[in-house]
Length: 487
Image 1 (cartoon, rainbow, N blue to C red):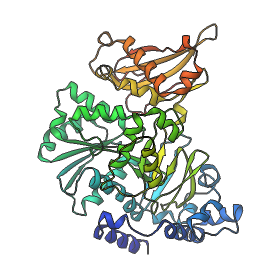
Image 2: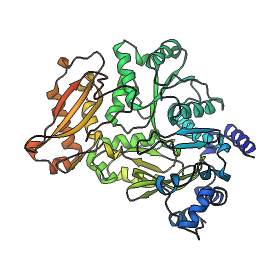
Image 3: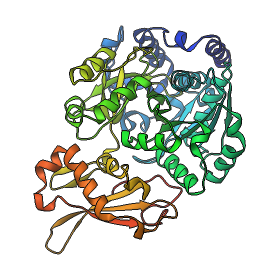
């Protein structure tokens, strides 16, 4: 039965255009079906409802709030993996991914082809709407780490599914092997109209930096980028656009909101990037709309695939998967806006946004990891506040963009703010000016972070900047996910 269902979904995906896939059944219908199937077919969820909501029923999306939240503690870790799958059968799922374990012990997340097809639509949306890959020969290079982690294999599978719809896409999977990526680009990219690099933002930035030091002519390869795993600034995006000679930042890059738990939940679009770039230039307006002194990632999502709710400043998601998710408290900081709400807010603050060809999908926004935040005299300082300064000229010609932020205390218990910054490959610290870096960081903190300006005494509005060689093992070890702060 599962095989027949997968075959049917596969044929449906291949036979229908992106426009048709994005105008499918309503969120209400999908949620009701998801709830009814999970409550009858998933042993763990049936037991969960008996404990927490024995009279639960769902007749529309409006009823969703009456259901209890599921979390890693009260549901995912409370029941065996197979019991969280339909019919208690783990063998009905062909693949299992592993979460990173950044919030605890790594967890297993199974999926079947039907779930991969759903996520492939997010990739098709980026490839079609942003990169016009349906009309251009495209070399797609997966630079996410390969293995059990969700990014690399999932991306490769989904992009290959899109290529099977007739998109002229050729896929390679070197993972995070920089030498192999360079060889692929040099030998194969000239034969394609565009080349897509898909990877973790700091890795892609480091890849381009190293390539520049080795005289790779990035603008000659007509680069496009797919990012996931980290919130970055618009200054950072503009820096990469400069590296590759692009004057179309809203179309030549797109970030995905992806997790091992739920697949890809949303994606940047030319419209969402345009709106975000406006708010990046208007920090007061951004604070009024998003509520913090840092700019969140802003994406659009398909509520018929992944249905979001906002809960006390965090996100809750429902959607089908190997482990069906109903009101799963993913706990990322952020919120949601309808399509009309977002456009009205942007217009209210003076934006003039081009909505031609835009898809009328709602918006989800999310902030970077809260556990990277440093508290200094009561002010929360976010990595995003620092990144903006390091991505400006001439600083961007000295440093990679990676840094570690920390506070230190002297014998008199006086706090100071410290910033360790990674140099670019082959760059010596004598060729970089820490004074310019310090002034730029403080200037951006005062511009972007109202808490820093209000809470930190004037005499303490300073930062101790140190420069470290590229890949220094203490601050910037290779092969591990970078941490932007230390306690």
